[in-house]
Image (cartoon, rainbow, N blue to C red):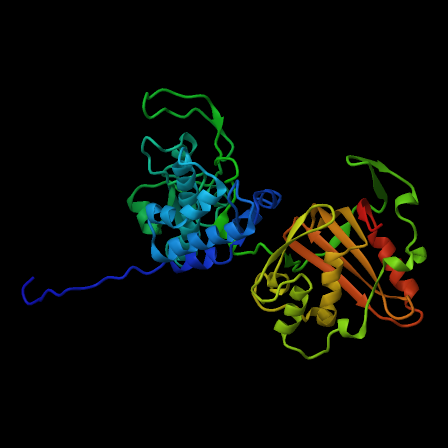
Length: 436
């Protein structure tokens, strides 16, 4: 154009901010621990099958973060991590495919999580989303069947089908305005067709193939981006209450069988041996008026976590993995600190010790806000001077994602009977563990 002078312009690509924020919250863990998590919680974990050393998992997780930040190619990342694969004894034969799968699946997930955060910001002006399956010879039949489908951004369809929907999945999502939908003559779907049987067309032969249900690939039927907005660390139950649906007790006989019993697996707590009362000293009860972060860090230090942003996987006696982190005391909706709720901040160390070392663990059939679900209930009693029962803690874990607890510490004469009455009502369901 006349009057416009050309100039050399250096363009520096910016790192994907939202994708980076997502990746930095990943918790490296062994594959066995990863697959014990609820599907939704896995979006906040990082694992590589065949890698069990924690130092190597940390290194690989960091290498993926670097690849995102610097825009590394697969070849560059592969070269950077060569020492890891050599130490594991992974031979060149088949290595490239496995590494390509690890690299592309993880980066695609991070990209789509970041993309989701961006799409949420423009949802008011672009309220519709369209599935894009690429549609070439490498596109999977079930993914191809979704190509071009348009759903409202908040439709439950996306809870199952938001990409990626398989290892090395290349599918994407396009945002649309109302005007675009009309101009392009698109149909906005209202019915979720997930699970319907289809007979896909083979793109090479043009013939129908064997009927199959319309589902993402196994292990990919969750919404990683939406799940990221929650947390891998369980958050506190907000609203609603836990209503026990069963007051009796069931005891395990051996490893597998469970049978209804009398009170044999629920001996009265009034006769509990003093060795089952966890001793508490004055320093275990924290002072009032401290900062929120001080209480949270005191809780984390009980698990050997020295930094506020640190995390650790703790296994309950029944084998359930729980990710311990500051998210325990962060409001799910407000993201504000909740550690001082109901004055419990002084007793956070006792709550931590209940999770670390429960006296009993029960699986309780319960109802929460009208929805039935199994609750893991941990019980611990504390002594304070002269082996008297001075307090207790009850910790409830719902689906590995939500918790609710009651901690009472009132070492005064005459309080014991009331505390025991409350605790006896909490001992219901299947007894999974008792301290020996």
